[in-house]
Amino acid sequence: MIDNTDRGITVNKALAWTMLVSVTGLIWWGGGTLASLQGAAERLTVALMETREMIVAERASSAQLEARVRALENSAVRQDVRFDALSASIDELKQQGRESNDLLRELAQRP
Image 1 (cartoon, helix red, strand yellow):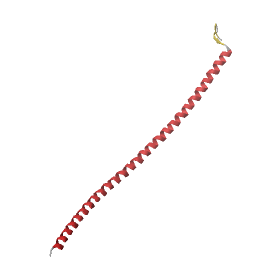
Image 2 (cartoon, rainbow, N blue to C red; image 1 turned 180 degrees about the vertical axis):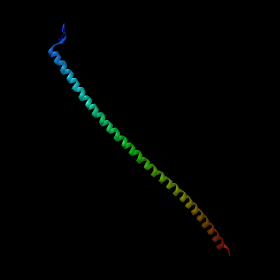
Image 3 (tube, one colour; image 1 turned 90 degrees about the horizontal axis):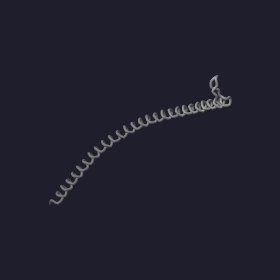
Image 4 (cartoon, rainbow, N blue to C red; image 1 turned 120 degrees about the vertical axis):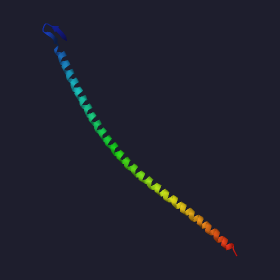
């Protein structure tokens, strides 16, 4: 019980102990909660740093793959040009073969 006397405000011993134990328990619980929150924040920070490192490594790997793909595309374009030139040469050879065959037929038909 709390009394207001000429000595000031007095608190019953049982109430004082209850308040002291409650405040102490609250501080202890709050400290434990704060410590667990700090630990969780540290773990999240570590996980975030690891994720950033993974992202940087993935970007580097992606850049390497992109460079390789570009090199392969350039090589494919050069091969396409070569194949086009080869195809044109084959077409010319076919045309010359036809012309030669036509001339041979004409010569074979002459008396």
